[in-house]
Length: 408
Image (tube, rainbow, N blue to C red):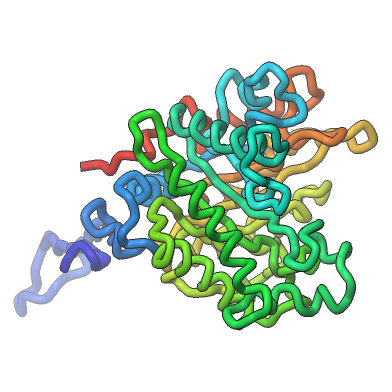
């Protein structure tokens, strides 16, 4: 099984320029060491064995392989709600308005899709949002883009909020545990997963092929602003829910067009702490990290901190044969928070490329609510963003290779 091994090819040649009487080497001997070549053990033929879902659709397998391969030299640029943000009234994404090209990834959310008020009726606002989201995902796929879904799932008691601050202390301490197998809200959680499964299983492109997505459930769990945060469940409880989520979608609902992403916030400073709630290699395709704090006007220190965290994330992904990603990031500009000079082209770019960091993508959060993460054409930092997207390792939709076909 030579394709599963790392092959190190090294040859040493000794060129004799003169010899002593006993045929030993003299000081004139020359040693030439050829460079080491490391062969990637992940190939188009065996790639399924490194994925969570070994029965994944061909296009989903290709996405895993190609995104991992892309990360070795470049990174894709995406934005949450790119087609339906606050500034996107003309239908084009803000990234396209500013650069001339769409992002390489579209971020979406299952929040409205699984909302308790979504009754499936044409006149229902939540169902209308569901249709907008799925239509946007289809549009993104038609452009060759990558679809990434997060899930701001509302808590199981009143289903009014995903923020722990909106819950009572008792609810905070019991909500996540209640959706564990055997918990009082476990069946409620399964009905939410049933809805996710139904939507993803019916997400098809113009050729009637299932559209692959990257799914990032229960993100930023190392903080405690969400009801699934670190203060409200143990590491084993978090792992159990994550594992159940994957097993239920993959094995019970037979959904085979999902790559699964694990994505804490940026509090971790070592690989060991990053993995403290990691559900295991058989449950994760994408090793992610959300990071706003290190980019929040922290200057060179923030760049160094972010790069250090991405470096151990990248090293973990390489060792585990996974994909690393900056799953959320950005610096929000408002009327009272001005843009930072060279934030995109210097601070961010250096943080995600220095020290041989390999990440597959960076996802900016959605524009709107009086501020933006990605500038519009007239914004003061539009030129900086344009400089960022034409950097050697940056990829928008126009330079994204075909992600849905495996190479020969």
